[in-house]
Length: 393
Ligand SMILES: *Cc1c(COP(=O)(O)O)cnc(C)c1O
Image (tube, rainbow, N blue to C red; front, side, top):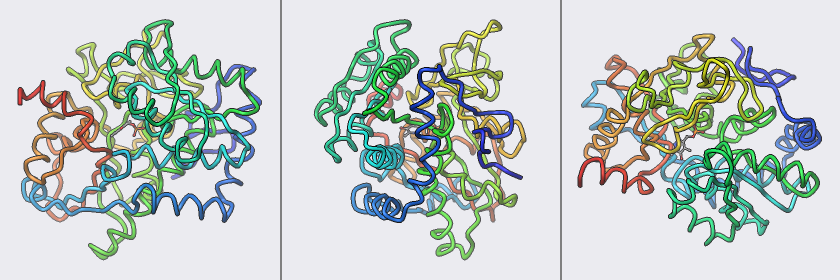
C-alpha cells in the first residue's frame, strides 16, 4: 500500500505535470523547493502558530450524540466549519502564502469559482500585506456577489475572465496566462488537491493537519488513534485528502469519499467524477474527469458550488482505481435533507458541500460499535439563500 506521490509526481497512474513549456520554470522552482521549505523548523513554527492563533486550531472533534443515536453508530464531526473564514480552505492558503514568502514572491494570483478559495486567498494576502489578484469568471462574479464584495473588502483585485463559458475553467486559464507573464515575483495559489505536481502533494500536506489532529483527539476520546471510517466530500479533494492522509496506509481505517450526483448520476446534471469520468488531463494533471467521447470537458453540475468541478485530484483517482477508497454519489435532494437533519439534531448548519458527506447514512450501514469520523468541511452561512429557496423557509 503506497499512497504517497512518487518522485515524478504520480499516484499510481495519476498526477504528473502536464503544463505548457512556458510555465515550466515556475512549476520547477516550486517542485525543487517545496519540501525543503516545509521542513524548515522556522516554517513549521510560523505555520503552526498561525493555525493556532489566527485560524483557531485545533478544530474540535465533536461527538454528535443525537446524530449517532439516529443512525445507530458512533459519529464524530471534525469541525473545520469553526475555522476562521468558515472552512478548511484557509489551512492551505496559510501554508502557500508562507511558501510564497520564502520564495521571495510579493504578488499572489488565484482562480476561484464560487469565491470561497478567492476569499481564503485574499484573507492571507491581507494578513501578510501582499498584493492579491483573483481571477473569476464573469458569470460567477454575478452569481457570487457577496464573496466578490468580501475579496474587495480584504483588498484584493477581482479580475473577470470574459472568455469561453466565463466560469471557473476560464478563470484558471487567465491565472495561468498571468503566471507565465510574471514568473519572477508571482506565486499562484491553487485551491484544491489538484493541478500539476507538486500542488496536489503540497496542498494535501497542508490539509493533513486535519487527520493529524483526529488521531490524538480520538485517542483522548476513544482510547485509540484509528477510527473505523473517515468520510469526506470531494470537489477537487482537499478536505478529503487532509482527512484521509494519516490513515492512508492503515488498512483498518475505511476511506469513504462522497461526490455530488446533482440531479442524479445519469441525469446529465451531475459532478460524480469517479462514476462518469475517464482518464484525461485537467489543470495540469492526469486524473479522472468528466468528458465527451472526443475529450472535451463536460460542464459539471451540483447544488453546492464547491463540488461543482469536473475532475478529482489525482490521489483520489488512485484511491478509486485501487479500491482503497469507497466512492459514493449523493444527489442534491439527499444532501439538502442531510443538512437539515444536522441542523435540527445538533444545532449545526453545515455547508452544502459538507451535507453531501453527512448523507452517507442513506447509502452505507455502519455497525453500532463503529467509530465514524466525518469531515464537516465548512459552515452553512454562505449557503443560507440556497437552503431558504430549497426549503421555502
Ligand atoms: C471548496 C469546498 C469544498 C470542496 O473542496 P475540496 O478541495 O474538495 O475540499 C468542500 N467543502 C467546503 C465547505 C468548501 O468550501
